[in-house]
Image (cartoon, rainbow, N blue to C red):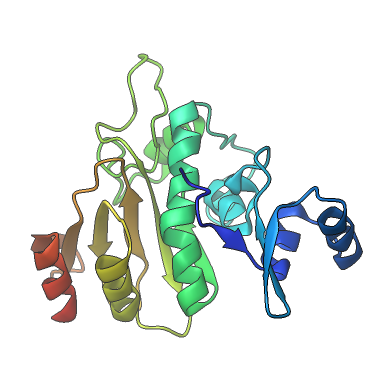
Amino acid sequence: MLRNNLYFSSSEIKKILKISDCKLMHLRESGELNFHKKGRAFKYELPSHISLLQHPLGEQLLNWHHESHSSDIPNIPRAIETKRFLEYLIAEILIPVERQFGNIKITYGFTSKELARYIAKFSPQGTAPKLDQHAGCEINSNENTVSKRSGCACDFIVSNYSMIEVTRYIVKTLNFDRLYFYGEQRPIHVSVNDAPVKHLQVMGESKLGRRHPSKKAFGEAAIKLAEEL
């Protein structure tokens, strides 16, 4: 489902497979990579045995915590459904946004059971693991899913662009589940789900700097709300 109509440029496929120009030419000429050619450009399918988590955006989703938390905390998805939703997030949201606007910086990505436990103990401010979908479909120590909501989520920002513009693009164009907008120069929170509700939630801020829900909308109304940002 994820790989239909998802093709990568030469530079993209080299980054995912971590190969040289010479190796790419060999794989193409030997028939080991499916591709089509338009003009002088090649577009490649991702081999079926390669996960989208090997995409640089996938590596960001798993390694985002190295900057703000202990780097030796395991952060590997174990549930098959978590991996599927993370790939879906990459394919349906992150790749289209990066192709449209440029480099994405993920500020809060996937959280394994171990990382979630660490954050809950040392840095719980502003987190809601039962609702925010960062844990995907991972199971806690009580054999229950960490999140009450299915799907996966991440927070990210795009440099040199207003996040208003990025939000409008996602809400109008992409198959998102929930999007939380915090401000023009702040990261947005975006999730995916098999049954997306397309919920745009605008977050306000009090004089004391506390965040609180402000306007919200769903579906077509969310597109209109995004235009009013």
